[in-house]
Image (cartoon, rainbow, N blue to C red; front, side):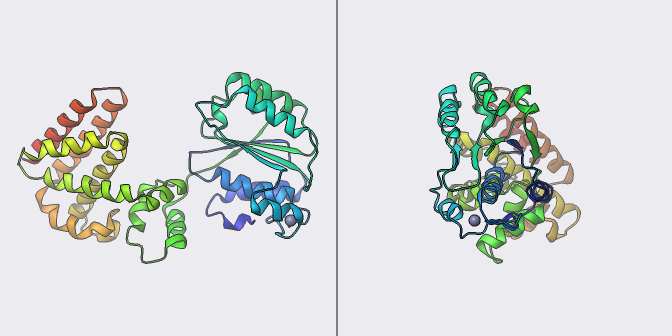
Amino acid sequence: MNFNEIIGQRDVVEGLKTLINSDKVGHAYIFYGPEGIGKSTVAKIFASILMCDDNTGDKSCGNCQSCRLFENGTNPDFGILECKGLSIGVEEIRNLQHDICVRPLYSKRKVYLIRDAEKMTVQAQNCLLKTLEEPPEYAVIILAASNYEVLLETIRSRSVRVDFKKNTFDEVKRFIVKRVGEDFEQADFIASYADGVIGRALRLMDSEGFKELRDKAIDAVIKLSGSDFEDIPNISVMFDENKEDADSMLDIMLLFYRDLLIARKSGNEKLLINSDKKDIILKNTSRFSTGKLLHNIDIIEETRRNIKQNANYQLAIQVMLMKLQEENA
Ligand SMILES: [Zn+2]
């Protein structure tokens, strides 16, 4: 496995390479960054290199016994602890501690990745602390967390923090194109929508449901540009049926209004996020004034805030739809 497989995250990768090359690998790391940013992917590559007999600092050899077992997913010197229920409890950490005391069988080191580390209970963290205070010399523990603050200060102070940053639009697009090819017409949209998080782009690419949801939400925006109030109950039902994805639907509508605004102001098709829908956008720009579009964007943001603050969902959506349409009337 090779650090070159990672798109973006140059600071992270360079930092880890330096540690390996200068032989300053510590016992505990906190990989911190949003969900889907690539913490586990980087952790696995880092682990494979640390465990390999013949690594070159930026990649593992792929041939030694440790590497072969690792690539099959059967290397007993590497363990992943994941949150299966609501939290990671003290029992699971105790199991890890029993296991860590056994010397590595096939590798130079023994590496553990604890995903969703912020879900460890306080007792679990305190339990883990004992290992961090006196780790076996061959052990490395990587905590992957999207929330740093909930980790105990005592855990934080014994770990090296590695910050994962959001990728740029171009990096996410490069990832998409590498995966599905140049002529994927939704690449620009997904890259924008992923907001710098490759895991999010991956989810969207693989989701049939998302394509459908997007078409419905865009259709709603167009319908709401008319003055036919009869559309509102249907759109409202769609929101009810997709309550779990309400945030995504609001995002889609928001980005569509944003594109209408860009098309209206600049006429530059290249700046459109929904570039695969440019025909629909250009056909509909004249139905909205700049003021109306800006106002609609505000209305959506306001609705999102209200829903987050536990407003009645159905009511909040209906009021939003009426306002969006009223502004257009
Ligand atoms: Zn190897």
